[in-house]
Length: 165
Image (cartoon, rainbow, N blue to C red):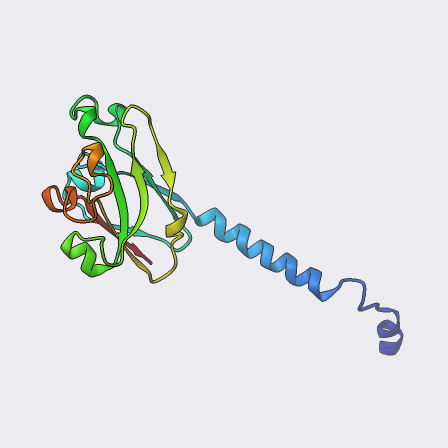
């Protein structure tokens, strides 16, 4: 009886590649449902900076979005002519020294304070166990967007460590 059952089974009916593809797709769908997008207003008035917080903990797969300072977010507390910011990814030394000149990578320039700009930093697709260091070396003026040292990182502690767990 067992021989009869096995002789009728066609093992080629479902190719193994299709099964594996389905499993891989299911894992990505399940992982994606847990991922979230975390938004940070990149301004001394943003919640991650106003309360003295300088660290953000994300889960692997999460995305980080930066919202540029703008008139709507500041509610008139900051004049638009000092809302020009930049965001650099640096190493730990650059973070501590507020210096992007050695290993910094410019991720974002906030050039228009009258417009709401939210940018998901694909550069920081977060990976388990990684630590990212972000700083702003602009002093708020348009002419300072290309600065690589100092700025609000030094004067207003506008910097953020992103831990991925």
